[in-house]
Every structure is written in structure tokens, then in C-alpha cells.
Image 1 (cartoon, rainbow, N blue to C red):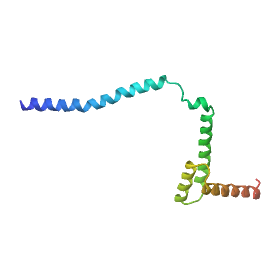
Image 2: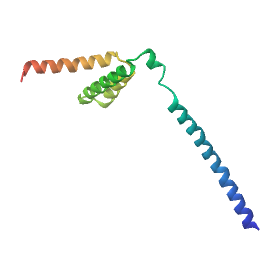
Image 3: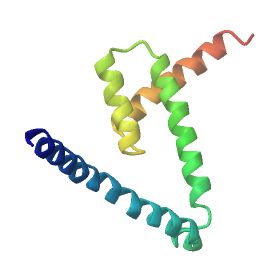
Image 4: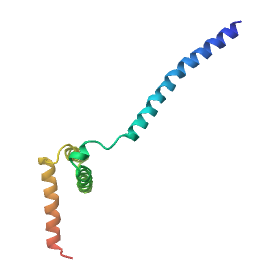
Length: 114
């Protein structure tokens, strides 16, 4: 008798434990179906070049990040520069470093035209 009560209790706990798992799947399926049926966000109607502008911004960030990574500077300063890069387009610290890097490359090219 004790084994039957223990087994029934364990089965009850098991089914109660699986109920929240099954409950989470149903809203996700409904949300996916609803998302597939919706049209594009309204932002694209008012600003058609948004995706192109974002892609250009990401490419610029990647280019500048490669420049920062190629510099021989401490890791803490590199982290600050990368944080400034993602945080805002205009930063005194970032502009100073990029201007220095560009001037250095220009001077190098003037000395060695090959």
C-alpha cells in the first residue's frame, strides 16, 4: 500500500512539474505565427534608407575597430576607445587617436612613396 501511495505521489509531482513546461510552448507558437503574418515595421515606411544607414554605420565601426586593434596601446585604453566608438560617433578621445593614426600613415606614405 505504501508503494502505491508513493508511486501516485511521485506521478502527481511529475505531472505538476511538466505543466509549466508545456504551458510555455503554446504562447510561443502563437507569437511566431502572428509575427510571420505581420508586415514590416512602420519605421521603414517613414525612413526607407534606415537599413542602409545602419549597415554603413556597422561597417564604419568595424573599420575603426580594426584600426584601434592594430595600435600598440594598453588594453585599458583600447577598451575605452572601443566603448567610445559604440557609445557615440563624436568623442574627443577617439577623434584624437584616429587623427594621430591617420597623420602617422600620411607621413609614412610621404616618406616612402613606393
